Image (cartoon, rainbow, N blue to C red; front, side, top):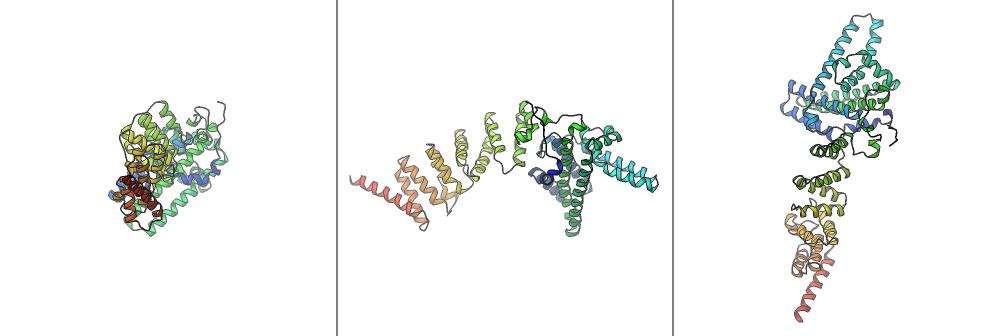
Length: 420
């Protein structure tokens, strides 16, 4: 396929960089690190937690430079592997600052000031060179820093200014936390805030590398592997997911789809894909836990036809469940009735008043149940019991006229049958 990878210039999507750190997975990581710091914090523990945050940021950079704009999931590869990378990054930055400080200190003021400014401006290039190559020697080569900065051109300076702006906001938050909170909360809160801002800044760096990958040379983004703009064509088919599907790595696909769900909590499509993938791979144990959650999200968004399908398939697998929200019973029961799945609809409603005593949805559920019992199963006796219960417990409910009419019809019908 002949296509050109196009991407929005980073200066036109600044709000999205801040939104990146507010996605579910970075926020969960920030909360976990803050919680650990609260429970067992100390200098060493907090230092290790910062290493985890830096590692996550580096993974975000690598993911972004490949054209994948979803934050890394909290899987074993991200959390437990390749901790050489953040330690290398810390070493390179400390060594860079140490050497820069020594050189500046040995020069007269007219030379030290411009060198200091140039050294500060090149810090993002140092970070990029290390994370991209993962080689200390490569990242400490000044020619590589200059290559990155010069090939990006004047937008590099805008990127640096934006990074300083983000860091300034981070510093303001830090100052507020130090002044406004008790000592025991300062370190955990600073850790959480820094985790957010590191995710934002590393994502920005990765995005800039992606935007200028042709000028920088040396790699082809995964999003270009098949000559298409993966992000535009399918926002949920990440490069990693595509590779995992190609390799038939079932556990990896499940983990990546779960990460997509975490990062797109309001979207149904990643949830649908995980449900279908679990079905196709015969993962019934996983479906036993996942199907009810998927059902409830479908019902929450009024997708009752799809919810009924999930419910029927689960009952056929021998894993029946019940909706979480009482308001979802009647519409799903009506959809089941339309599909002639009467027994499943009746089973769903049985004992509803015991699960939700005095709930305002009891009249509508039992009216629907009575219709199913009478019309589809010829159990007028049970239908009358359900209607009589509603008449007794909810005499003022708005559905009482319908309930009374249905009950009168059944009573009259049985009276006439008895007289005959």
